Image 1 (tube, rainbow, N blue to C red):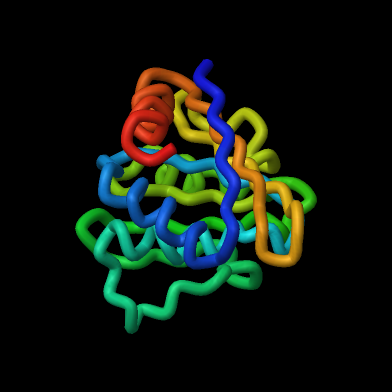
Image 2: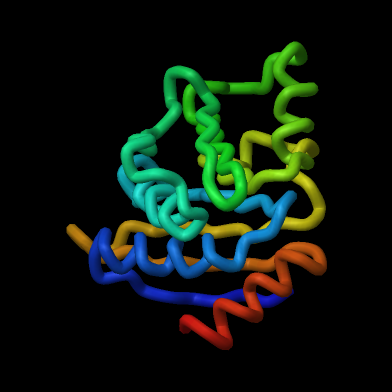
Amino acid sequence: MRILAWTSTSPAATRALAAALGRWMAPGDVLALKGELGSGKTEFVHGLAQGLEVDPAAGVASPSFTLIHEYPGRLPLVHIDLYRLESLPPEMLPDLEEYLSGDGVAAVEWAERLGALLPKDYLEIEILITGETTREFTMRGHGPRGEELAARLAREWL
């Protein structure tokens, strides 16, 4: 498993990294976003949307209350936020499975709450608050596609 570390010095830098990653995304890619409240997970998704060519007027926002937002772009972006769920209700599992294996890109905040639903192939992005505007990113590639994305980040961004 390839593990990368990167420090963001600002929200704009976080968005720039995510936008680069968004330009490399392919159908079915999954990003597992982890980090405490306020760490920048939603900020990262803003940049990802930019890289996926989501219309800025779409107003990418955290779907904390609705759990899932979908945005059309070069590839559909499915933004899932599991913060409000202690556990996954059984009636929600088929929809989550469909989003995680669909033709778009799934960005999942609080991805650790997916448990066994998390696919075997994904890029994990953990964000740690290290200062008022600084964040430490740890990225781990899981499975062939996750490893490929991590390798490309290492080669072209970090």
